[in-house]
Image (tube, rainbow, N blue to C red; front, side):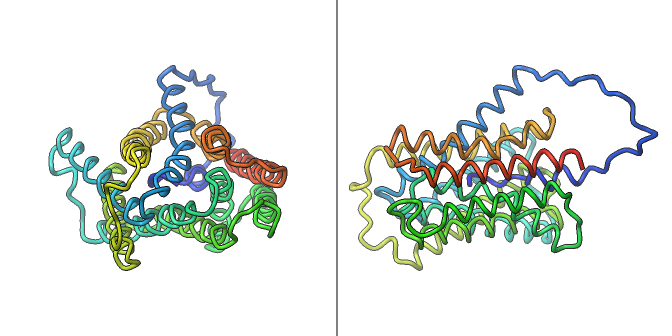
Length: 323
């Protein structure tokens, strides 16, 4: 999990289909080079953030590093917005600010923060595969709120949960602490609740403004939790490795600023089903990078469970766009 983002499944569902009598054949939409470039950034950069997190926590405390990342990224984003559009772009109502804080705590502190903590004991590729089940949780939340998911979406949820079971069965995924796996699953639930809630509560109208407040709120929450856990005790910045510093800088600049900006632009410039493909490309990128850079083991249960989860997400995305 990287930056606040709209869940593709719920975003597709938010646009009602035109009546059959009003539909006219649409010309195929040409995909520009800029769209493919932005999509490539989201694919590779967001997929690589799991590797970046794993390298950061080698020598940095989890919540303090994650909090620093998002507070820095949020302040930079807010500064860029004020510079480009004027300070008034940051003005929000108290209700909108409160909503952004709640969503930020769910997404950044709960969703991303727990993943950072989990990656102190869970391989980055496995974490990414576990997180890929988020669209399935969102479908479940929508069903609980009274919406009726499509049959394909239900099948995708069941397939994703089956893959999750393969990934989490004791002993199947190798020498991995089950506590770390549970942390990632809880993180996916909190991320899903945050994504689901963001479309149902009064949020700032500008998505970049909302993201800035979310990142700052979630980052401050991470810093506070890190201090409560005592992560500052014994912290020696001189002992932090150079590659951990580089990875943290990469997460701030590329993971939280460039990739999110590319994603927000894609939501306006590209077909949503195409944008939504990041949900099942990111885990594949993360697994490959983990294996290549950190020599993380790619066992057959991880490959099988991951393939099942990604297949379920593909089914959810493809059926929701036709609903």
